[in-house]
Length: 120
Image (cartoon, rainbow, N blue to C red; front, side):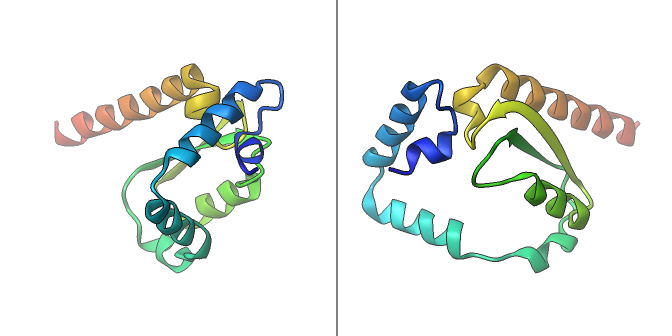
């Protein structure tokens, strides 16, 4: 089963069970499309043209996206900010909702501040 690998929280098997339940409830055609887009798409050449401020929350010990992924993205995407989380696995919104919310809120507040400052 893929859920424990994705979740990466071996100390909390309930999280893996919850993710597996979500996977099992997904419509098969949606799951197939998601897998194709996720695992077969390559848009690396498009990164340099992106100019929207973006946050990537990267977890500790993420099997699907190791630190090198965040480093690569950050080196090619001028407006990208990588936040390294203490959370483990690939689903911090599930395994560490408090930390995820705090990091996202800080990013959005900074963006709002920049918008206000830029229009003043």
